[in-house]
Amino acid sequence: MKIIILGSGLLGVTTAYELGRRGHEVTVIERQPGCGMETSYANGGQLSYSHAEPWAGPSVLPKLPQWFFRNDAPLVFRPRADWQMIKWGLQFLRNCTGARARGNCVNLLRLGLYSRRQMTRIREETGITFDYAAKGVLHIFSTEKDFDRAKRQLEFQAKFGCEERVLSRQEALALEPALSHTSRAIVGGIHSVLDESGDAWMFCTALAKVAAERHGVKFRYGVLVNRLRTDGNAISAVVTDQDDLTADAYVMALGSYSPLHLRPIKINLPIYPMKGYSITTEAGDACPQVSITDGTHKIVYSRLGSRLRVAGTAEFAGYSQRINDRRIAPILRAAKELFPKANWNAEIKSWACLRPSTPDGPPIIGATPYSNLFLNTGHGTLGWTQAAGSATLVSDLIDRTLPGISLSGLTMERYA
Image 1 (tube, rainbow, N blue to C red):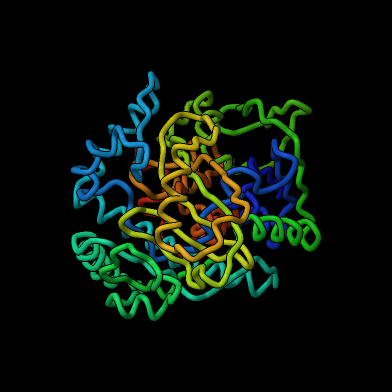
Image 2: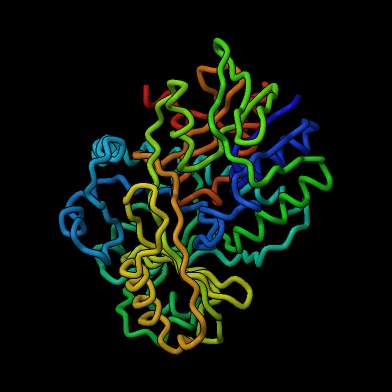
């Protein structure tokens, strides 16, 4: 079957690899000069399969008013005359109930654990390297309130096969000795032993190379998608700035830009860009060996070979990818506070990206009203974590085989 994939980020590349290895004729269209150059480029470096708690939940509601006007808040909304953001925000609030948050958590966890199995398969099949580490993720907490809530979340997730360990402060410091120099209060930790870390961009580029060399996948870079042409209940072509491309099936994997191309063909998805920031610097002996999530400040730390990646914050400000130094500052300040003996005189590179976020948390995977158009988008902060599983599920649907897990709560039908 001839298949066109729109987008060569993590979701597009993993889908291209999976369909290519199954014998399909795959072409990937990408506006950038290479793959993984936007949201995938400098993310937090975590494969956090155990992280299944959506942003939308009861605990966030009382925090929203105090976060609204703070530049250093974990979640920031920039007021603007944008009906799509307003509509998204109302749906977000609707999902902040305990029952909805638990349901969304189960869906995220099911996909995350499935994706872990598929990622293991891909690593073994390809042998690619990407500064991979299988040391789990250590979640640390600065307040007893946050720690207690995290322990309740752990107990809930354990019912669905998620393996995590509660650690005392002393046990957390023993697992990651670099934390012993901090002046920050650490009351305890949770070790997500199933989780992993690595460089997402290295993974993306290496997998694209394997897909092209072993499975004949074609990557067309520097091609801008103008629109999707329809014929009845099917897509007839992708109209680009260079030519019109036709295929038997099409996969939408354009991240935050997916809804912009879907609305003209009357598919309205609640995906909105959540801007995230990261810094990358030299990793010395005083930097962590284990990937860390600061559960109180919503910041993640990952050692990527000789580099340290620090990422965090969520900012809703439309489609601007401009780096706001006022959002970088709290990330750097928190990093210096947590690891004061690291070499902060080394060069620090800043990055900002747009994460394609749904108001309830899970991505949007699967079929559409068009018989040959499939979705693989809306993964928010968990794009790399869920990429392998999502690619396998979409490929199963295209091949008309039974998916490896239930798609309940993951398709566009939940917004009908």
